[in-house]
Image (cartoon, rainbow, N blue to C red; front, side, top):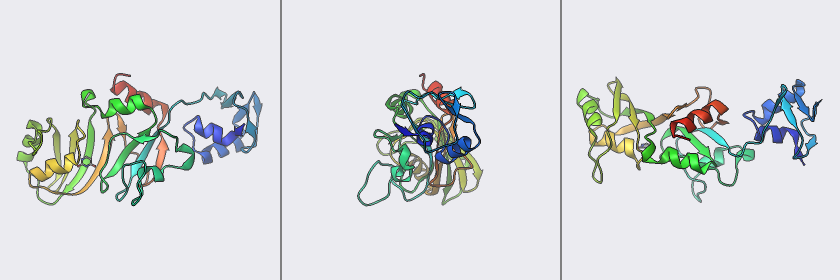
Length: 235
Ligand code: URA
């Protein structure tokens, strides 16, 4: 037996607070009977519906986090806070892992999931998922940089795949890459003599960072967002 509000939150895109409100508004039924109690215990077999739509248990969790600077993309660390520390306790499932990495000082969109197949595909270079970053740099950008990104920036250990650089202002740009090697965007810009002062990931494939999501906040993906990600990697 489990609390009704907990169960609905785990099986839907609603937060615990939103679930309490739905119950208060009389929009939830348990085995066909309207209920007003968020604390009531429900059996695993109970048929729960919101606005008449029955809830099905979600086998996987997909969470969008607005990663702040200063937090490690890891599941545990003895010395520094990790992205998992930022995820609300009810969502911290056993296999919840970040999809790719952001550096400690990079902010922005980070997806976490316990769906290993989707995680693997999104991070595999074979699937060419675009990642878009906003960067501020310490020296003025030039048209030559745009051409160099399009041609593929040679780094010490490998040559990057062609990437897109859009100059937004002399020292601001948007960078689109399909790879996700260690420090890649910082290294690409540094290789052009434009060290990065600030870096934020804006998108991953069809998924965009939410303007409503403050740094440190997270939310579950909507069903449409999960479908769009799956489509993007042939699932
Ligand atoms: N590229 C970087 O250099 N850092 C990140 O965190 C992500 C991409």
